[in-house]
Structure formats: structure tokens, C-alpha cells
Image (cartoon, rainbow, N blue to C red; front, side, top):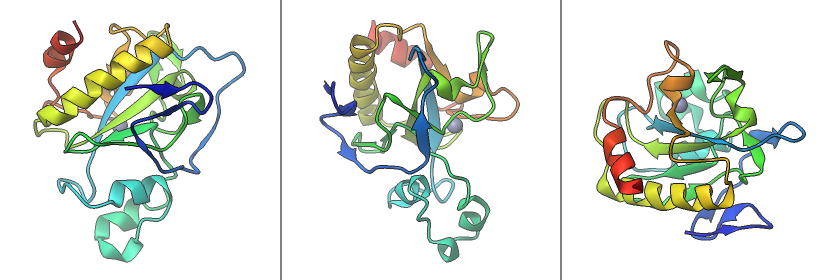
Length: 182
Ligand SMILES: [Zn+2]
């Protein structure tokens, strides 16, 4: 997997630009990966509702849950779907809106210095092998491109927003990720 250094986009990903992003603070060092899980409607896989959420185009009337979330204005840099395919929504040098109120090792506002990776999934179900395979290639590419990101600086959303967020959840196998990266 390769990152286009001028566009700050994955060459292998479909790019669907999200309006839910802005500039990082001046001089921000990108040094953290944040792993999330998401499924829309909750517990259902497939479809393009996540893409619609991140582009503020969720069809409000299609599901009761959409009425609660359609105005959220959120995004992530990258989504890895159940089949391992990748969609990018925000160039890596820009600030995606994925972490919310958060803190990592004493540093607040993690969106400023992190890259957000969403895995299509729930807080309890296992993820697909194809998703781990893509994630590992993505992490390797990001570590190479952004030297301040290391295998030790990968956190779950639940780690940086404890009590408020539970994703990626018990179905995410951190040991498996570590061994695949080793
Ligand atoms: Zn999350």
C-alpha cells in the first residue's frame, strides 16, 4: 500500500471526500493511529450508509437510528469494509473529525495529531481476516510515511475516550494486530 505524498491519499483506496474535516493546528506532528468500529444501521454490514454519514448525506427516513445521527458531522481518514476494501474520506495531512473529546498520554484533542481508521464492525463481533490484512498494510504504509507513528502508538477509541466510547470493542484482536505487525 502506498501513499501519494502530494495528495496525502492512499493510491489503493477509493476517495470519497468528506466535508467534515479541517486543517490540523500549525506544526501538528501526526503521531497516533486511532482504531474505531462502526456499522450502520448498528449491527448491519454492507450498503453505503457509513459513506453517507461521512458525507452528510444519510437518508434520514430510511432508518429510525439515522434520525439520531444524521447531523453529527463526523468523518474518519479511512474506512476498511468487511471485505477488506478501503475508502478514504480525508487526506492524512488534514484533521478528520473522529475522536471527539479525547486524551492520549496527557495530550487532549486527539483529532489534532492522529489518523482515524474505521473498521466496519460492532463493539462485540469479531472482525474479518481481510480487514486485518488491509489494516496491517495500511499501518505499515502510515508508519513509513509518518515516522512519529509506531506500532506502539496505536490506540482504540475506547482508550482515548474511556467511559464515553467502547469501540473497536471486544471483537478486535489487539494481539493479532501486534503479531501481524511484528
Ligand atoms: Zn469511534
